[in-house]
Image 1 (cartoon, rainbow, N blue to C red):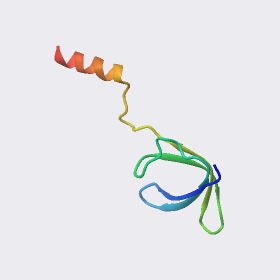
Image 2: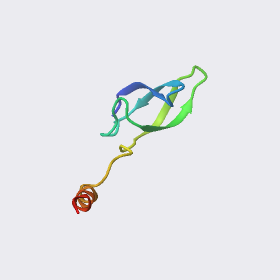
Image 3: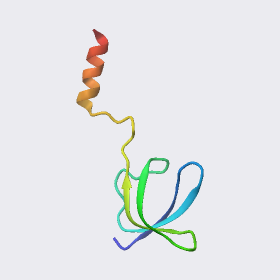
Image 4: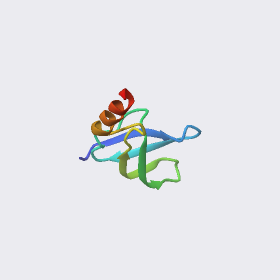
Length: 74
């Protein structure tokens, strides 16, 4: 809980260093989408108060995937 993690977040054009103290979401991974909330310091370091990990944009519940596969077989 008291561990500080440092990472960078990017919009593919600019990279911003981030510091977050707390437990990161299970889905938080290198190269995956994330949303951070907090404050940008004068030194350029973003102090995050919250980190949210985004699901893969291509994620589909197993039931929906199965229905699509069944429809494609017809």
